[in-house]
Image (cartoon, rainbow, N blue to C red; front, side, top):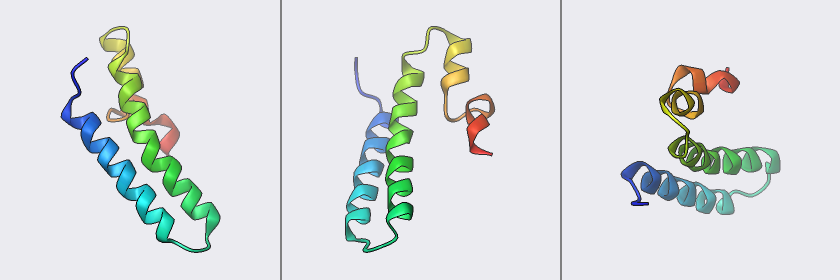
Length: 72
């Protein structure tokens, strides 16, 4: 499967955040949550790419309201 720009950007973002977190001393819980947040974006994009149809894609997509139920 050909990599798309969104996957590439999310990977670059995750790497930059992880490198930033390596420079932060203390605040372990904040750093841990920041790392999980940064890497979950790419995981959500990958999961949405392998959806079984439009309805499944919209449900799994982190960029549509139905996919953001856990954020609020």
